Image (cartoon, rainbow, N blue to C red):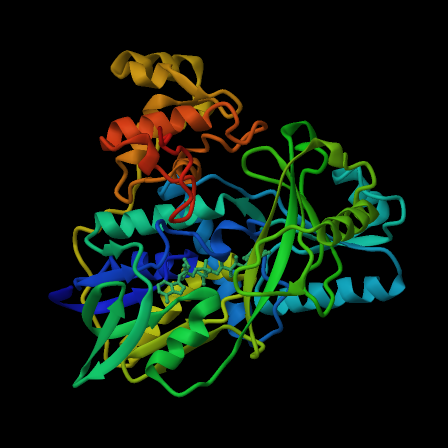
Length: 476
Ligand SMILES: Cc1cc2nc3c(=O)[nH]c(=O)nc-3n(C[C@H](O)[C@H](O)[C@H](O)COP(=O)(O)OP(=O)(O)OC[C@H]3O[C@@H](n4cnc5c(N)ncnc54)[C@H](O)[C@@H]3O)c2cc1C
């Protein structure tokens, strides 16, 4: 299929990077499309990570990562408020267990100050214990960063992408880019059965960004996929800590953390091992390493409260920094490893500035819509709930009992600007199936609601990625 229309900008990949760039561009007068190979947004690294908005003391001074982490974290707070994304600024601690690690903590403090991180403090064991009572007695000191936060990472991406759509950006799902051809001053992108013509291309393809780059330009960097696995523990463990508790970083990364999630669970992980592009397994070896390392920080974590294990793949690269570069009308936004989530709005601002410096200037709109309504029944007061149910009784029918999610919220997700089409797509938008039973009870009811609202047979509803059908028709 030939797409007759000429776009100004085509973004390849709709993780947090593509979503944030789409959001930033949607403030301007232009024709923009986001092309995503999966059947939903936020299906790569963006949906499986630690969900930390890092304060910004980790990246080396002078790097793009340092600059964009601090700026991104600042913007994230503001964006989550405007676009109704769960976010909590709970602060982080980096624990030291010996003299060598005290030196690391001192180095991170100095680096943080140089990077512009506000409010950093070095705490003694007693001061650390006073704010985080379950830490190990072997802790000798810590670095406290009050600006660190936790967020719902996939809802963050959905919210940015939805706001972009509300402001005129198009999203094409289920369309893998397989070819990019320069044609005069423009490009022709082959994606599934479509040919998309565009003046500018943004490569935000995560672990596939090197392949996408090579479709248009000579090879210049390699993505080195690196897996990190997790435990997600029940809410009974959610108050085990009240800050993000890190250990000192090593060459392999920021190490195993213990942190509350925005939903009130406890997340523990990740490890870091080079992996295949699609290996999201959480193996015994991954998990025993995580358990053994986490209890060094918080000895009382009860892993029997585990409700889920999962892994994400880091789009690491053979460069020491984010790769945000212009090449004619082609822009790489690649190697967006951690702190990519924290940096996303900073990355988007930087990319759009780089585009402008390279001739891709678009005027700002006067009527940009920068809000997003989202009913969250389980955070409402009794009076607010009663008022809502009076207006629409579907908000009075609880479907997910673990997270108290109502039928009204599920229907909102199915009819959102980027509609949920799968059972997990509903989960990512309104948390149905995110709790203790992990959809064991509400999953079949969500499937029924999806089939009813979309007027399709139950057999055509997928759990998650394309082809993950749940119900099969019996052949008699
Ligand atoms: C284990 C782990 C822990 C992490 N913890 C944190 C953290 O706590 N804080 C933090 O700031 N960062 C963290 N990160 C990093 C963060 O998750 C990433 O930096 C961020 O998600 C990268 O987003 P992205 O949009 O660039 O990539 P992705 O989210 O992977 O998105 C890329 C998208 O491109 C699509 N795509 C790929 N190829 C094509 C193609 N040919 N055609 C069309 N579409 C294509 C993919 O389907 C995907 O949707 C962590 C990462 C991992 C894996």
